[in-house]
Length: 139
Image (cartoon, rainbow, N blue to C red):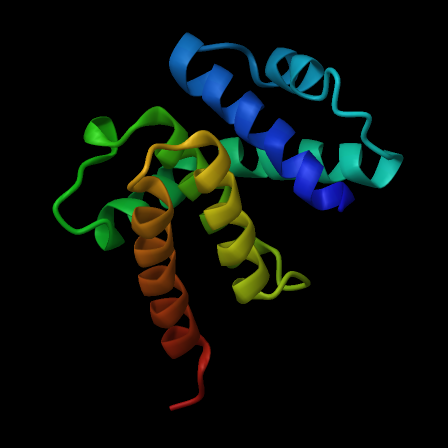
């Protein structure tokens, strides 16, 4: 449960960085307010936000490649940042199963996105996971 709550903080931080142009460390400082995260949850929040931001160009390219008919600029800010964090986890966190990442992203979309967000997030991430698994499988 700690990671689920941390993912809400991750979304807050990425949203603040994206929309307000906030400094990454400042956004992280404010992202965990009121979440009562454990030390592990706080560490997870820091790693995912910093990792996502550090790899933003690659992550944005992946999202752009798999969000058919959508540009990043046209996506709702919530959806865009849920996707960014989830793609970071898929690409860089081998210890977290892709199915868990997708499920958690869809749950965030249900809570913070609009009515179409869960389906959109699930579709884009499903395509990313499929391509990632094909790339990882031996030929």
